[in-house]
Image (cartoon, rainbow, N blue to C red; front, side, top):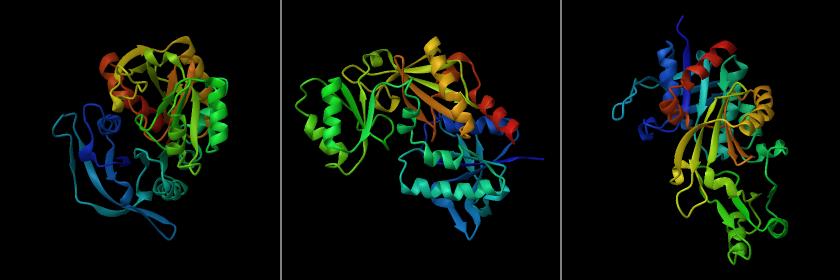
Length: 314
């Protein structure tokens, strides 16, 4: 019997097929005989207790200019699907939260949802890292200007970032005696109305911000070290970083061993750990990326590995 996988993602027309991890996962599913149904966030609805969506059958190809074809959209119950991949990129806003409630209704009807909707709501990608203090640099989550300034006085070199950002957007490094301290704090916190994260600056960022992919609580043996461009502290590929694939270090494996069991317990089957130097900085669970780059260089098959884990858990 053919199994059906639904995917909730951003517009498939807008992706970069050479780099897109969601496309890699869909190719793996199609190669294993899954039927794929495509949805965007705005296609989902809840009719009484029944989660539904306007979804289209999707065929994918590993091609740079012609990577997908869509059938006609049809209103369908999410309960008709075996698995739903939630691959909508941040921002993690109220609309994203509402979507997790609809997906949770599908889960109650027996549909497997990756990642678990309750965990998508409960595990903010930046704050979740604070659950592992043995792995993280000194950090503060606050909107209190005084507390943030005290953190700066204690550590001198710090990084400030919003809790709902992605791709390195709105990340600031503040050095000793930085005259921009006040305006940066005021801007990021919206004058004390928005909570942000402060972390002690990790100089090893020059060696790369490593993305370690986790499948069912276990690490892929290679990571992508994202090296910041000259004059920047952000290794994110979206911010101009250069990716270098490398094997995991002993410390990387230790961090993975600390985080992995919790991911598995929370139903987070696919995650990306961000590691700078010896420190865990973020845990990406909404739409982890970098699988394409690792597969291409090391001839791994991360998509097939994840699909095998999904099939085992059905």
